[in-house]
Image (cartoon, rainbow, N blue to C red; front, side):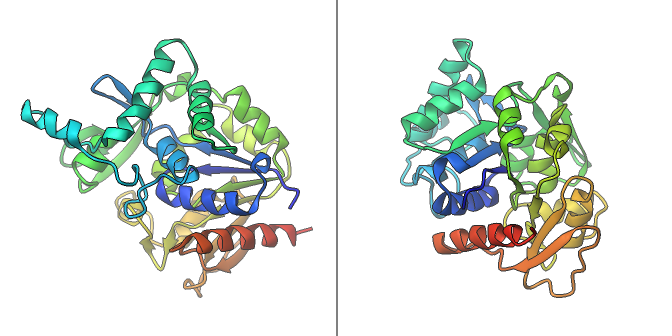
Length: 310
């Protein structure tokens, strides 16, 4: 397949699709643009959860049970912090801390997050291009009924996404810009995929970077979203709960409607037999990725379907 593919993703679901694409594409054909709205500072370290999830997945290092973090990691540092009376709500693994130390050191030396990420992926032997959505720090803030506005990780990890969401805000988004690397990747792309990540928490921050929507839609190429919703339920995480709280019907159709002004193709699950995709191309595939083979199969079927458009 001589396609240049750019894939926009958030965390675990998006990482699975990226892994599938990496199995069937040559490394130079795949660029991954990752949400950084989840990033935050913790104990003086810059943590980039979605970037790390995709990076560890591509490196074959990810915890296979959780889908995030490093396989076989330990929590000795957290235990030591607990001894000092610290609330160790964010699960930093001992090996994982090495990533955050190197990232923080690179940023303190004046390197852009894109440059630091390229250095980390090169050291792990990852040949695909992994790019943050922007080099500017942007923070997803979650306005909740019970606790007011919370930082994303407090809402998502510490409170296990149980508070009721009223609204989402991206702090410092107005200062962000599309990096030259992302701009170049989109300009060369033959296909743009929106991974099966949470559209509101993972993809919305990417789309909100000033200039991103224009860069995505400047050329008439396939732009295809893969559903994260199957029969009204999220495969993983708070997507369906969040949809209800924000006033959306819990269905794949709501995802179609959310993306309708930016994508021209939609992949929904074969279990949603009654879904009618209007205003764009649609196809039903098995989107549940339970194994490495499932990931590669879905990636291949999506690209084969897109190739049939011409």
